[in-house]
Image (cartoon, rainbow, N blue to C red; front, side, top):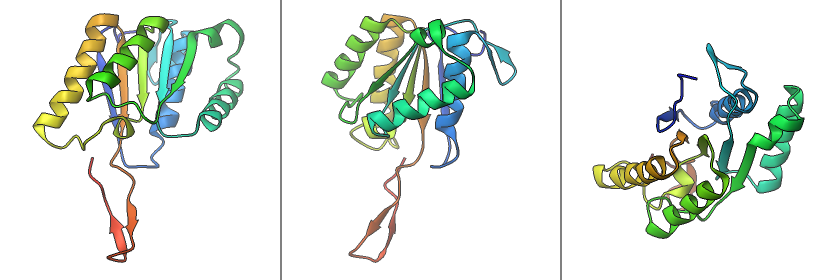
Length: 171
């Protein structure tokens, strides 16, 4: 599939609630079956999804139901692996080491990070913080030779009880 080759990176960005996670669920379904995604025919691939936002059971159930609706089961499902981390930080040495271990164990053709902001320790709005994240993913691309899909959106707005308003925490 020329859409996402080994060693390439796809970055999907949008506001919270714009169906980015559903888009990558659909991408994962096409990749594990060798089906179509958008206008592209995918080659059957081993996919590792790192879910960083939803509770493990909720994400697994959602993915199972999604795949059932697409009539995906059996052997194709063995090519779809899901990991969950709410604590991993890819801009820290320990975090990238943990992700590298998981990738070496699974040997995915494609790694999907859904979503980036919970696994970075700082906002990725400065050149220095963005460079740390980019360097981390470059290490994985070089070591594992997999395609990487990164889903990202601005951090969720929080209610600030001191000011009585909504505060955006950055990208």
